[in-house]
Image (cartoon, rainbow, N blue to C red; front, side, top):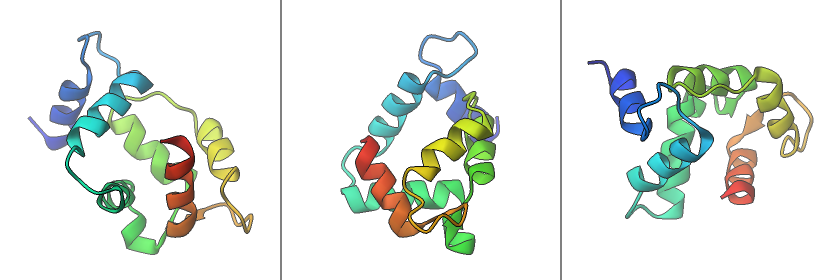
Length: 105
């Protein structure tokens, strides 16, 4: 079983074939137990691909969430990112990502 398929199976707590936001958040909280807040943010930043370019777009986040079985539209993700995209350039920097994570934890 591939890494993504395994993660999807682990997250789907009620085995209904979909992963709710609650299941995703519970999985991430358990996976990061014992990590510092800084380590958690670093792990998520890398998971979404931010280390490659130093920024994240709604499309990048959408791809990862879709692979994990979460169903959020790109529009929903863009709306979320706009709340922290201080310079309005359509993507978020690591600092903006950290701000978003703080806001929604």
